[in-house]
Amino acid sequence: MKLPRLDLNTGEILRGKALWADKHRSRYKPEPTDLADLMERAGPMADAVRHEVEWGAISFWLMGGHDTSHPALAASEISNGSASFAVGIVWEALLHENGWPVLSGEAVIPLLYSFTENAQSEARQVAAKVYELWEQADRPHVDAVRCKQAFQCLTSAVRKGLIDPLPGIPGF
Image (spheres, rainbow, N blue to C red):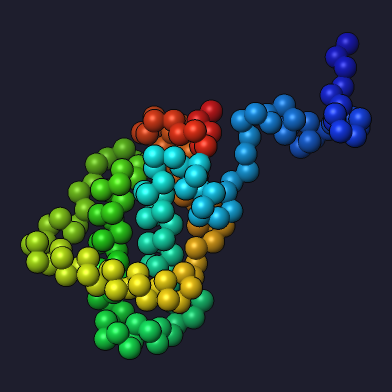
């Protein structure tokens, strides 16, 4: 006969989720709720995960997020279309340069690299200006949902063997 598991603090019998959490306590950690926690867990992938979360938030902000006005962007004389294009191609290149895993496993050459050096430089400058404006707007859309999505992507990449196991990311 198997004896029930008891909570060491309360002496109560553990059931359901509490029992599962007790059995898997050593490897179970809830998803991160902020970027700092996610970056800490990502270890050597911290820069890549930061780019994924921040540039994803910037892209969402440019699409309107929850409001469609961008007075700071309008004042900077950067069109929304130019800003969105520059952010998209620079984001893709930054992920590639920092080793962000592609879950399909297929190598993708970023679109930015198909342009001349002058055009690449200009796109990076526009993206940097948009990044600056986004920071001045208090970094909207860097939230728990975006961090959870990045965490799940890293977890999947570890499980698929696309990246080496990371100390704070369960590999199962």
